[in-house]
Length: 269
Image (cartoon, rainbow, N blue to C red; front, top):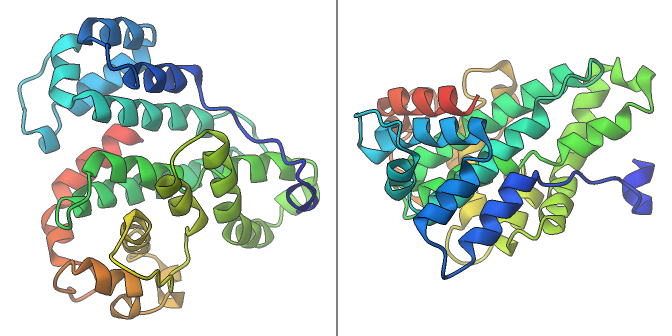
């Protein structure tokens, strides 16, 4: 990765709607009417937030077509983070035939990880919406990596080689992108520690630990799971104190929350 080592790798820009909502959320004088007008500029985002607002997490099953009510239900912080989540999807869903398949696969992994993290967060004292955003953002480094690889079409046809590069470099580049987008240290760390199964930071469990364990569970029904360390051996698992390990090394409460996880995956995909 010459571009990464030389510092010339072109990093993606965060979509304008995510920037604008984040700036608005930082304004202590913001009122809900101003936020509604801002979100309404993007019909896709409006529909997405309406759909999330009636999900099982928010315990409201009565549909609403009123964006004002939906944003009040979600709250300012969740609206900001969910807007960033929505914006990320637009980056991954591009119609470039050379890298489209890779990006769609990576996005689906991120979506599954994010849904798992959202459910897990409630069991160990983390903000579920922030956990969801972190799960989606950890793989953002794959986007500039694959875009750069278009310069090497022969390599792009080597699926095993591409997978190796993604595994080796995505975490480093994710950290660069999230720092470039001015996200906080906690989210940058989530990106940097992507796939670092034996990470053992001193002190209590942090968001990066939570995302690692959520990502681990996204592999449970795949052959590649056999190459991973035992779940009980992971420092992050021990720190999070998440509960019993089931027959397939999963956590019991995640199996019990399957409907909610599937609902979130459907909303994000």
